[in-house]
Length: 179
Image (cartoon, rainbow, N blue to C red):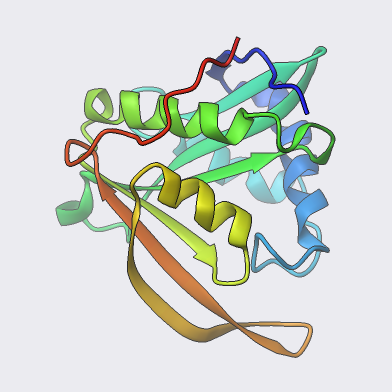
């Protein structure tokens, strides 16, 4: 598939229904989230408010006047000693997957992390989600831990892989032209 030209912007309150729709569309796959039922826009209001441009932004990529993908920086573990560590979450609309949006957003997150005061980035990815694991590993994220069988999805125990990267430790392996 052709790569999409990408730019991102900060998410706005009016984007939240599309952000939630993209998230909810992943639930049935049992590949991406531990939620097993769709969430509501109202249930994500506090989460949305936790994302601030200068500390823990929430970005969206638009394509054809719709949100095509989003990335969030989230605080890790909620304790002050972890303030320089952020968890990344990337969700891409099914209609535009495999077109470079995940790579674009991860490239941007790595570039912007120092300005946000972040020196360590984490990804929490199910062990059976080979595509997401490969994406993060392609950007020099290393497997820092595995929580075996901690999630039960449809009666199947699933591992959670913790991937991490020190922002200044290594350049991304993948420098692509997204135009």
